[in-house]
Each structure stands twice: as C-alpha cells, then as structure tokens.
Image 1 (tube, helix red, strand yellow):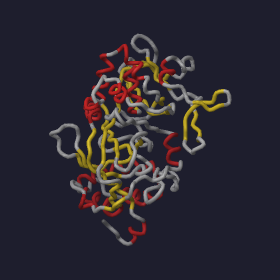
Image 2: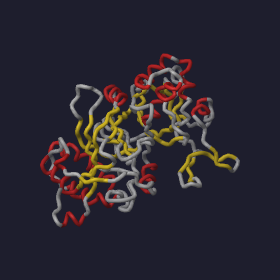
Image 3: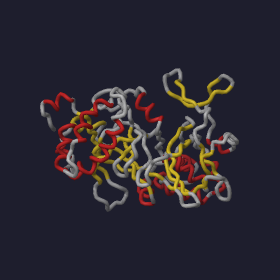
Image 4: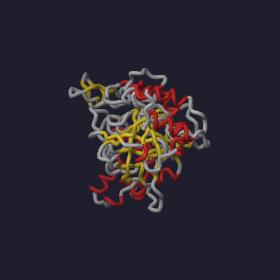
Length: 392
C-alpha cells in the first residue's frame, strides 16, 4: 500500500470472511451522517452508474448465499445486515443489459447518498504484487511463504477484544514474531506453501495481503490472506525516519524498496522491526484477469473496489469517490467503488484504500497514492419507500 508511514492493509478471505460477516461489529464511529442529493455528486450520471452494475451484481450473488440477518460490519442503521441489500439486489437483477439510463435510475431510486465523517477523505492505494518463486527450495529460492500454522489461535481477551496467539504450558502467549519466524521458529513443521527469491518481496506481499507468484515454468500461483500473528504492525517508513535513514517527505513504497536493496546487510534486521507477520492460503479457481478475493469473498475489481473501516461503512456499500491520482496532470478521479475489503489501519469514516489491480502501473500508482478528496456512501433506502415510489 502507499503509506508505509502510518498505514497497512491486512485482508481475509474464505472462511475468515464468513466469520467476519457473522461477528458483532464495534461501536459505530462515523461521527455523524448527512444525506446529500445525487445532483450534488459532480460527475455522477448514467455512464458511471452503468459501469458499476456488474460489480454490484457480483456482490449480490455472494450476499444471496448468506443469512439475511448476517452483519456486514456496521452495527447501526440501514445497510448493517445482508437483508437490507436484498431488495436492491433483486431490482438490479432485472435491469436491462447495457441500459445506462436504467442503471442511473436504479441507484437513484434504491439508494440514499450519505456523507460520513467531516466531508474530507484520505485515499491511499493498494495492489496485487507479482514476485518470483518456486514450489521447491533451491538456488535463489530460499525464503519460505508459510500457510497458517495450526497452533495459531484467536481468542477473546478479558476486555472483549479478539487477540491472536498460542497456548504454551496452559498459558495463552503471543505468537512468534517476525524475527523469531525468520530465525526458524516454524522450521520443520511442513508449513511452506512455496519459496520466493527475495525476502523483501515477501515483506511487501504481506503488506498488500495477496499476490501472484510466478514459478520458473511461467505458471502463476495466486496467494490470498490466511491469517496474521497478531503482533502490532510497525510501518517501515517510521523506522527509517527514526533512524535518520530517510526524510518523512521521501517515504513511499518505492523509496523503501530502494533503501532495502541498497542496504542488504541491514535489510533483514530493519524489516524485523515490524513484528507483525502474515500467513497465506493458495487460491484456487481465481481467473487470471480477476483480483484476489477481498474480505467479502468477492474478487476485487481494479479501480472499483476499496478497503474501508467496517465499523463505519458496511461491507458491500457503493461509495462515490472524488479524488486525484498521483500524476499532477491527471484530472479528478470520479467513480463509484465498492466497500469489498478491510484494512487494519484503515480507520474512521473518512478513510479508504483504493484497489488498483496488478502489474507495474498498479504498483507505481498505489505506491505513491496519498490524496485527499470526497467520499459519499450509498445506503439502501427502506423498503417501504420503494412501495411509495420514493426517489432521490
């Protein structure tokens, strides 16, 4: 992701997503919500609406398999539960294909735009890296990528928080840190999914939460977030600033990678200043032209998916985004994205991390993206309004 000074992304898929949707959410931290009119959204119109319908329909297929009372993360207000979205899903399924005006009318009938927070949002970006690896250890492939260990467990602390760790002698203790894992704490347990050529590649793969590994044969293996050791995340940019190795204004994903490459003797110990460690799953049945599944279990769509704070914005919600990409000559970026992922440090009502896809361009843009702008959440209108023909 783009801001290594203050943020990180850690994502869950598969069974973890179902658990997320079924768990109780934290107290809402929106800081108030204010309804706005569709006419107040600069750039909103038929084209923007039509481009987003396929993504919304893919969400609906997933939501239709869940209980209507399953929570989507926010614990108050419309949109908090799967059932709140199903009437709109049924309406979307009957939309005529390719009818932009019908798509715009659909959103304006079934949703209410709502501004959360103070109106000024901060956007960063993330992407799906591709790195070199092998299914067997040998040659340059010496860094293991681990699946979730069977002794890594989550339990509820006395203050109600969910914490990760392991049992040792009848006591629940913190799980192994990055430094301990690097030193061999998990060796000999047959947890290796594959081996990669560069430990820094693994480090950044763990920050992004999913990725692609190209094998010597040319085959590409997809990896998705499996779990984490539960220890605090320490941004590497903060470490380098503290040590006088980098100025705050110079911190980006690209500058940090360059520093690690230029200081191979210090790279491992520097990365180990971040004790947090991510484990992965192998992803099957994910098409090469699709992003990895996000926290909803829906494949992420470049430029149309975002990670949000689920305590404030329910998973699945459409979000109107107005911001700029890092290129200073670029026009304002306006489009409808969907809250399909979560970020550990993506917190509050005015924060989102935009999924930009995979490949070199996505990497460059995500690594530099840190822009302010506007975000407006589309929440479903009460069904009773639909019976009365209510609109925007």
